[in-house]
Figure 1 (cartoon, rainbow, N blue to C red):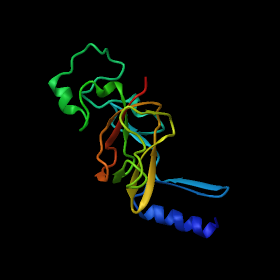
Figure 2: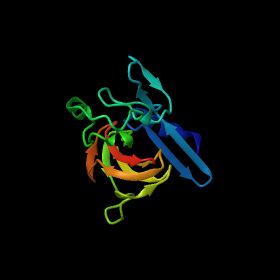
Figure 3: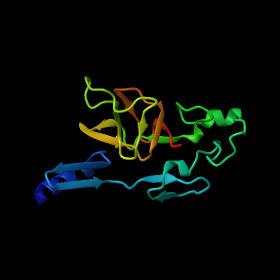
Length: 170
């Protein structure tokens, strides 16, 4: 891949809402990430940058994952839970959409789904594809475990940070 092609690729990414692109041509491999992974840590008023795993923070009103399992969920915590999740789901890790786009469970309409509920996945396995700006972005699992819930509908739009899957890491 020549320098001009790489510059054009970088310009295209900068001008669009794509966050990450990976291209392989023979021995050459390039991965461009527009924005670093970000997360909010509870109790802080600022954004922290890093590669922390999402299970290391929790939404206000939801008990941290280290909380005793015997505690009953209050009505308020059920209302504060992300859409598509239920009280008690906090023991699972949530795979969230890194971009806005269309969620696909398989690489093509006639292909089998990448994963189904009950499947065991390893870190790096492809879970789905999110199409954004005519670019197919494979979403890989950052966790090893068992798929407990699929929270998005095939061929439907998803928002940034929308919960897509629940994985039981145990």
